[in-house]
Length: 195
Ligand SMILES: O=C(CO)[C@@H](O)[C@H](O)[C@H](O)[C@H](O)COP(=O)(O)O
Ligand SMILES: [Zn+2]
Image 1 (spheres, rainbow, N blue to C red):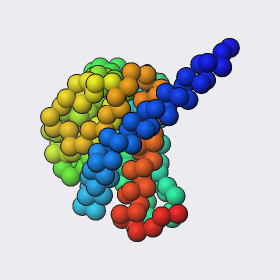
Image 2 (image 1 turned 120 degrees about the vertical axis):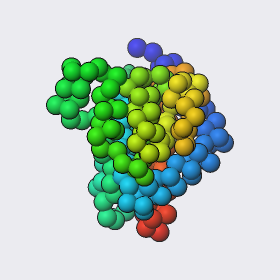
Image 3 (image 1 turned 30 degrees about the vertical axis):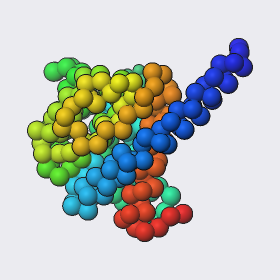
Image 4 (image 1 turned 45 degrees about the vertical axis):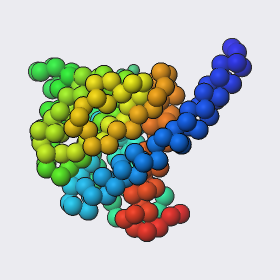
C-alpha cells in the first residue's frame, strides 16, 4: 500500500473544494431557496440516486425529516431508494430504468421537488425520474459530476449543481458537502437559527 494514493486523494479533494467554492455559491443558494419555497408551499422533497448517491439521497432525507444541527419541526422528504418491495417489483415488472420515475408518478404532486443525484449524469433511472418530475409539475434540483451528462443538459432542471471532476468518489464527497450546506441554509432561512 502506498501513501502517494492517500496524498493524491486528499490533494485532489482540497483542490476541488477550492474550485467549487468559487463556482457553486449561487447554485447552492438557488437550491436552498427552491427547497424552502417547496416546503413553505406545503410540498415535499423526493430524492433519488444509485449506489453512493442512493446513500446521499437517504442521508439528505433524514436530515430534513428528523433534524440537522438545530431542533426544529420535521420537514417533508422521502428517499425513493430504500423500499426493496417497491424497487424490485418495478424493476422486475417493467425495468430498472423506471424504479424512480414510477415512484415519482405515484407520489409526486405539483409543487413538490425532486433531488436527482448522479455523478455521471447518465444513469437512466435518474434521468427518467427528472422527466417524470417535470410531467408531474415538480421542479428538479440536479447534483451531477463530469460534464453533467443528460441530466445536467435537461432544460427543465431548475437548479444544476455540477462538480467538474472525473472521479466518482471525489464528486460524491463534494455532493455530500453541498447537501450539508443546503441543510444549513434551509434551517437558517426557515428557522433563523444556526448552531
Ligand atoms: O459509490 C460509488 C462509487 O464511489 C458507487 O456505488 C456508485 O455510486 C455507483 O457505481 C453508481 O451506480 C454510479 O451512478 P451515477 O453516479 O453515475 O449515477
Ligand atoms: Zn462511493
